[in-house]
Image (cartoon, rainbow, N blue to C red; front, side, top):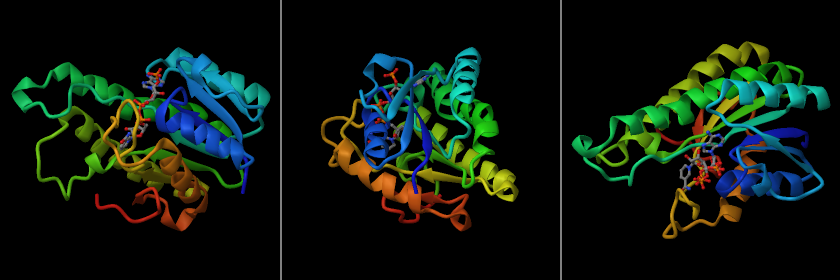
Length: 227
Ligand SMILES: NC(=O)c1ccc[n+]([C@@H]2O[C@H](COP(=O)([O-])OP(=O)(O)OC[C@H]3O[C@@H](n4cnc5c(N)ncnc54)[C@H](OP(=O)(O)O)[C@@H]3O)[C@@H](O)[C@H]2O)c1
């Protein structure tokens, strides 16, 4: 299985690693980023300017891609932010951080997905991958860490379930995947996984999951995650 994949947030971290992995596996990669100069240089990778916060930017990206490609086989909604230091108490958490986390991690995913559905519909086997996080799991939550980030990822999981239900009839599969704890600007230097390790196992899972599993929340190796 190879095709055309669009990855948001491909300027660094896991998104950049996924762009390199998909290209190495023979995919055509549309690497969407605010800073396109940071997208990996590779004949199979085309840098696409895209800010998930901007209607205009997303519309222009969709028009540019539609002019050059007949379809998109996979959309990877990877771009996200982690406002704050991470362990602030609720009273110390800026309310703006909630709004910023929602704007990028939830509304940004809805904006990008809506814009690219026409191109996904032209694929023989379209799929949407929302990069979520174990921090979005509600049922196992026993601490109060990461308010803005964790509530936004829990909301992303609900968005994933709802989209999967809506698009099942069109055979568009939608998954939430957790990449593990990864050494990136967001994950920090103490994380056990390298970008290459995470992207390698995510690639296997992203390309193997079938329509029957649509609406599921999985770890990078395909293990079922609790909601
Ligand atoms: N690292 C971990 O341990 C970990 C764990 C669980 C889940 N995740 C998830 O994995 C995904 C990737 O995380 P990461 O660790 O690679 O994070 P990262 O190193 O902070 O990279 C985030 C990426 O998102 C992009 N981005 C942010 N806002 C954007 C916007 N408005 N428009 C376009 N791109 C935007 C950034 O682009 P700029 O360069 O332009 O800022 C950057 O490319 C995220 O969804 C994150 O929540 C990560």
